[in-house]
Length: 396
Image (cartoon, rainbow, N blue to C red; front, side, top):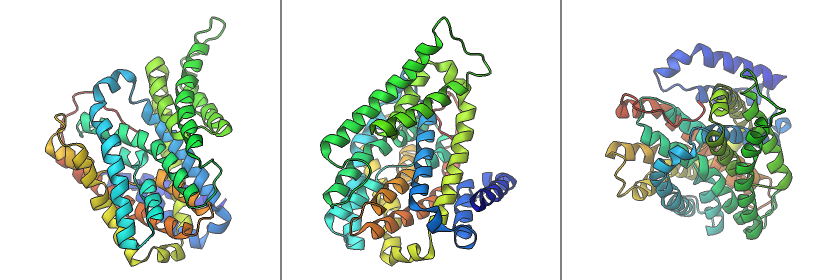
């Protein structure tokens, strides 16, 4: 009950301060994170809340956001928007992985394998916090498309690497850490993400069945819930499945997808806020102390070097994005729930450096939330243009 009460007060504060948040560096994300940090040692028992609980809440949140984001990128649009996201995923993401690993080794002094593990955890961007920029109509649609598609896919692509490196370090997680097993998880995620919405669309078209306009929005929600359960049951990659399912649903059932959009955005927003509150409660003073001075320096360098340089390199030769748009894409790569989930996998894996790895990940996520939440409005102002086409957006 203490968690629900804290969530209620934080939600009320976010509503009452929403006008101020729209005009200042104050953000809704910051309000819930601060509420968790404040309430954690006062009214919330972090140990009772547990790493597993936070991990599950963050995982469900990430799944919900990816499912909603995917519906903003139907195949008809992806055919015209694939070039720059492909550059970011196939060039920028591996380079980010390498740069972050080097920073972890040189700045924090970790061994190379553990450094690569941190690189894999912090390489993906977060679709939840990227929505702060992606969801703004005054930002060019081509930039929003890049950030949305990139953040929608890189979470699932990073998970296999994280699992393999945990296994290399001798750790154990719920999922298998062998190369063959993680590749099967990715393939299963893709297959289920395509199959589930198609099956749902076919059922709706059966002559003996029918869906009223009022009930139409609940159809995608049912597909998402069943898909989440199915991926957990068969061991498929849930994040790739969620984003793929969103794309497929928007492509085969555009009316259902449009009806679901308001429900999906509200659900994702509430789940995000609950996960932020739980994460904040888990971040104890002892954990912040474990980050250390070198860890905080590392966190800042990850954000100002670890992503910007690789993304700028990956976008060399891009003719769709203007210079200020490339700079914005390079800067706006927030770290969030994917990194938290993967960090908690490490924390419960039993490897020797688990607590240090999670402390560094948590510190980087906190710095990212602070910096990116404070800069989305100035970046949007720099990029301001009148919207000329329907944006590809995520949950706000």
